[in-house]
Image (cartoon, rainbow, N blue to C red; front, side):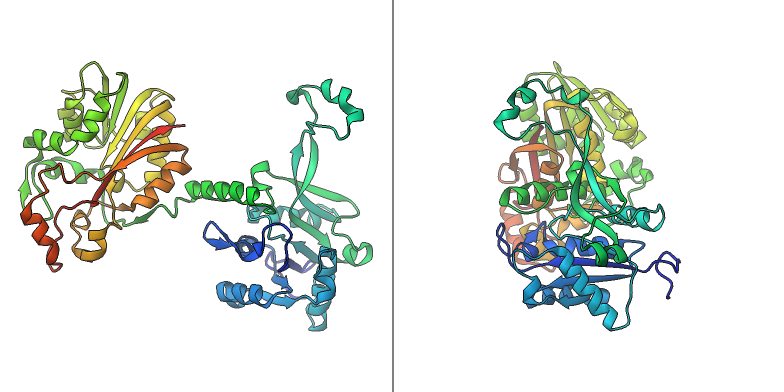
Length: 472
């Protein structure tokens, strides 16, 4: 027998993703878009990422499902077309498993264990799959499945009404294990004999409830999409484009403030630009001053000019990695020199947190905004300003878009990407603004520059965007 992925020769492991074309719930659900991918994508990927599975088969009765899977995964998976007699509404998954096993056996491919990956469970994870397999190959179980703790809140039938009323509080209930459908691992010898995926001594792999949802209805779809998006927060993908070209702490010391060259080639001394800075963020300052005073934090406060324009009845705090800037900002508030996480403020401490053109300079803007949420009070306000690197001028001017010029811009957001990130972090976006027409950049000269794409783009509407949100 050939050696499997784990290096063992005593078990060769097959995984099957059964995907019928028909469905009484969501029509054509196996190929419908779920967070940008067809539903079948997620369980196939779980099988491919498994460290133990040797062969993965998509078993379907529809050619268009097979063609879609082949276009995505190529030769990484095998396709088996299910005959009509095991593809109707009353067909059992076990029939498909046995059919696939027999088809592979006819071509000289024999296996000891079969894993079933239902495509309706896109929240499954590769580690759950491997843990089910290990229960059978390493712990002596005949079969194994994923399960969650079920407290059984309610009883069925009116005859049990008294028991329902007298039931203990949830924290005093003893949970039961509820099989979820995410994954089954079964000895093939048992499957062929019992015609059942679970039998003999059954092992349970405990998983979180949030990873157990089936997609069978439109409501399931909404829940699953939300949960899948939340995984992007840990993966830190999908919200922005990374351009890691610099941004060490030393980049923000004296030279950054006193000798910065702007996209048009002018050398600027930012220490002398307090009034200019206040004019640039006048809208954000006026918004803060319209609120009931409390504690305000400016993350990436620089020289403290924004803080200086906030009413003095606010408790004003700032954070900046530049020791040069932080020393000068202390004139306007309580300043911490370092990162926001290093400041380690108490949870629910601030009424307002501002990140005005900061997140584009940070390698981990997702973590930065998550930390901002932690330290905000419930319903506390968040103000985030950043360039939109997919705005009209970015597309028109390409590499000559002015905000590419700053090499410390390393996390490149679009308006949609930042909106998705904020909502996934459980902020409610109240409004967004693209300040331009009320600024000093709205000039005839800059409007005429729109026609020459061979030069650096001018300041224009949509180049930057400010989000106003609150913590849910």
